[in-house]
Length: 191
Figure 1 (cartoon, helix red, strand yellow):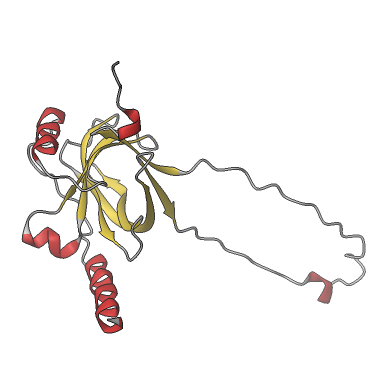
Figure 2 (cartoon, helix red, strand yellow):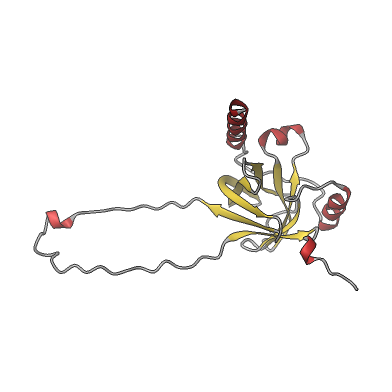
């Protein structure tokens, strides 16, 4: 059992290494076409149409159906509409791979744009909250700390050093909000 679990983790890591550097543009990703495909399919809870407010775009998360893409990831994230008119509907903006935790996914989102093509996928962790229809994204942070001990060079100058606390700003989590199909709690009930 442990060997099988370890091999699945290795396969997931290998798939992540195969994410294409440049995105592709797929055909037939107008909103009406995507909704009709969602209605006709047996969707997993993560699949459907999502709104990504940080980038002001509507995307669809769908299972990778063709054999080549399925070797890369479990799901792909495809643009349906965006405020940025240089991106075409059907542009793949990222990929998702399931992890060992039911609500966690490895997600690769393209973070650079070269005219109308997206490039440079960056890995992040997505937490899926099925009950509220949220997919929260945590990106890696790069921090650099430099410490210099000036007291070794100028011992008398630094006798009056004071410590000033810095305030860390509260951050709003980045993520997606499910639009279609509606979450059970979001449906209108008629009496």
